[in-house]
Image 1 (cartoon, rainbow, N blue to C red):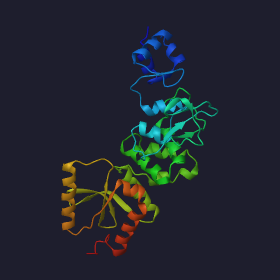
Image 2 (tube, rainbow, N blue to C red; image 1 turned 180 degrees about the vertical axis):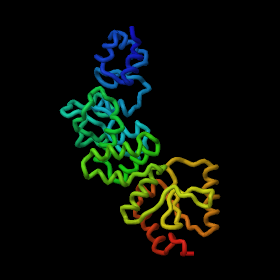
Image 3 (cartoon, rainbow, N blue to C red; image 1 turned 180 degrees about the horizontal axis):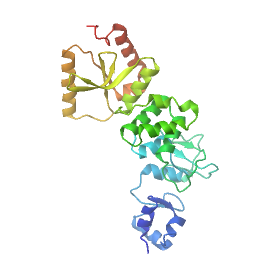
Image 4 (cartoon, one colour; image 1 turned 90 degrees about the vertical axis):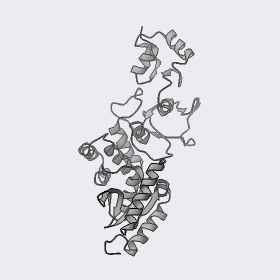
Length: 293
C-alpha cells in the first residue's frame, strides 16, 4: 500500500480524493492520516499536506490554481506588496469557496481578497496547482500596470527564471499591445522598486542608467544624466554593516562633488509625485550635468 502522505506529495501536495485513491491508498488510510494531522482537508473531497504553500490551498478552495502575480511569487519572482490573491479558475466553475473558509461561498462582487482569471488555458485543468511561469507572465501583461509588469519581468530575468531571448520570443506571440514590454525590460535590475523607478522615469521622458560603476569602487543603483546618482532602499531591513557601508559610500561620493538622491521603496511605489518633483527639480538645476559644479 502506498503511504497516503507520499501519494499526496507525488500529486503536488494537494489532490482530489479520487486521484489519491488511484495510487492504491484506501479511504480508511486517508481518514487515519487526517486524524493524525499528517494530512488535512482544505475542502470537501481534497487532501493536502500541512507544509503546502497556504496560497495554493486558498486557490484550491476557490476552485482554481495560483495565477498571475500569485503564481509569479510562487515561482520566486519579486511581486508588488499588498496585492490580493490571483487565481485562475476554469470557465464555468461554480460553487466557489472563499480563500480563508471552505464553508463560505465566494462572491466576486463583494469579496476583494482574490482576483479571478476566468480565461480558458490549454493544458491547464482543475488538478493544476500553479500556472507555469510562461502562462503567469502572460496574465501579468494583461492584468498589471505597465511599470509593475516590467518590474516582475525584470525579476524573472535577473533571477534567471527565463532568458532574454525566450522572453522576447514569448512576448512576440502575444497581442501587439503587449509588444512594447520587450523594449522596457532589463535583466540588470536588481530590485522591484529600481525597475519601477526606471520605467516611470522613461515614461516621463527622462532616461537613466542602472548599475553604474563609480570611482572604481562603487556601483550605483541609478544614474541620471552624467552624474546624478539615485540610491534606492529596498523594503527589507539593512543591518548595521550595510547601513555603515551605504553612508561611507555616500560620504565619498559627496566629497568629490556628486549630489546623491535617496528614495525608499515606499516612496517610489506610493508617493511617486514627490519623487518625480524632486528629480525634475534637480534636473532643472543641472545637477545631472558634469559641468554643473
